[in-house]
Image (cartoon, rainbow, N blue to C red; front, side):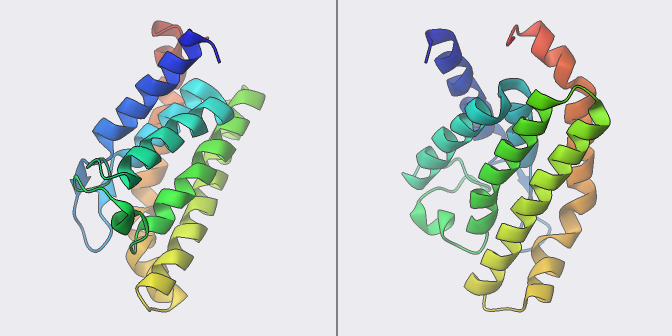
Length: 172
């Protein structure tokens, strides 16, 4: 990997580290800017390098740096009730990044982000149900449903400003 690409991966990982701890607690699962940061990472770096930047963030959090939501870190947070969403972000980044790399039409990119988010939700809801000892329906209503509209808004923001950011910071 070239120095320029390593720097881009590290910078996007830093952006995820900065934005992810910022939360709005609305229940057991907070609204976080982490999803927005992960989507931007996929948009700006593509599937491979966007996912790599998320992996770096995830490992930093697992090793105890307070980069997860609510300024928490450690393996217990990564394996806790919301840990499935942290794992699901790998799918969100890879799937979204793939669609962003392969297609130029924004509606297809948006559909790719939606697909990635859906896979993330599936992993997160199943994980939450198992760890929190609840039903899938209750897990969906608690850990997913309240966030759908906000996450769609995040996707639209990335679609609307992604190309301009990419041009301005010369990631091409």
